[in-house]
Image 1 (cartoon, rainbow, N blue to C red):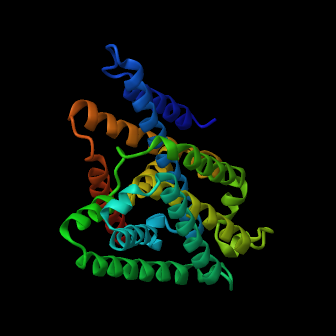
Image 2 (image 1 turned 180 degrees about the horizontal axis):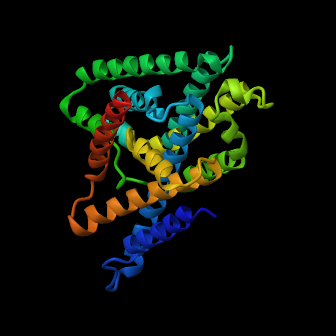
Length: 314
């Protein structure tokens, strides 16, 4: 076992225990512990999903500064929320069963990903850049449609859309966690089982194909896992853009091995430490509940710019 994995796992346990037990006391400690446990489970699921999806996407694309959000998943989610509010109204939108909304959102996001990946990779994984550019174009289209629909909404409905357009780690619902955790566990477990093949896939098409790897089929399968993981995290908390970039970069820096059997767990553990630790800081120390996502996006954007500048220097 990589020493870095051991220390990351220990740190993750300490951070999770701190989040659960800090300030716990009084007559209602069981009720408070139950609420914290739900939020902690949600943070672990979302962090794992984002981390594994980002590492997988970077492996397939062969680029360490890309994240799955570039494919337009976040923009499609915002478009779905805007369309629902515009067509149903605020009251009907609020009365939608959360389990039904979650299932529909996951299904639509996964179907869109499979349609995009399956169509554009039909001629082989050499079309990877064309697929990424198409995802960027679709993201711009979805954002434009969302902006157009938002212009016809009244201020109250628009405020609902705005609230849904940003990630909120404090609105995770307990009823959605079993399905979300099951999908995340299945996708992450499959990725870990494919770790030896992913190591070969990361070498690139020219090297992997002569080694006997079914490159095109594996690429499509990995992108399917990415679509499932991104759909789960987005449907649970909303769009999260740059967090995966930070997590993947830290995982690469902290692990001594480039093998996915160590890289995938390391990324998941880093994500758990950052999310749970950040939520603990904002809730317990600073007394703020909904600021973490803004800080994550701001830090991720700066980190993305730093990576681009460093690439130019080299």
